Image (cartoon, rainbow, N blue to C red):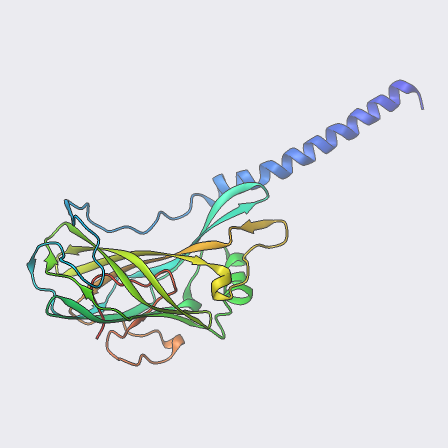
Length: 277
């Protein structure tokens, strides 16, 4: 084969390799940014707050001023959401995996100005994302929802509320309790934000979860999809003193009945400043 012809063959081979490499790099970028689209925004309180309490409250101390008592039982109602948020890398391209469900139930009990009880549950088997393959991994290898269909949170320390924040005001508290997820029960403490919206109390919590601590398999898949060793359990609860969500039929009956306690994953525990009954 003539030297010139061999050179042309070499350049053709090199060109093909370059095209293949560029295609391999471009495909995930195109998929993530133009086909899959951006991930859902983080859960947030529905009203722009005009006032924020000056300090974070835990099991003691004063709370932000309010115009109304919060005493009574508050049930998890319609519009409540719980789920996960995990950073992924798909063949070199960063993206965010988000899965959610509205099958959340539970209740909080406030006696005087103190949250004395709270329990919540989440139907993990109903958590879905925008990708069927991701859902299959979540339901099976990662969370094994057939064996562990629910996640639950129970408050173990009272939360001093003071009085209910005024409309549009945000209260911030610390919640301490036990979170049961994937067959593991551990103590957790996390911050919650609450806002009064009409007759509802809206509670927001982001609970960091390190997978190994909950015996959760690393979500990574070979060398195609890799993830961090942790994620976030997101929870947004709309609490009402009316009838709350009924327990999910796929997770069995709720012990407390009625609005039932919400059993949220370790990061979704929504110890707002209101307890369960």
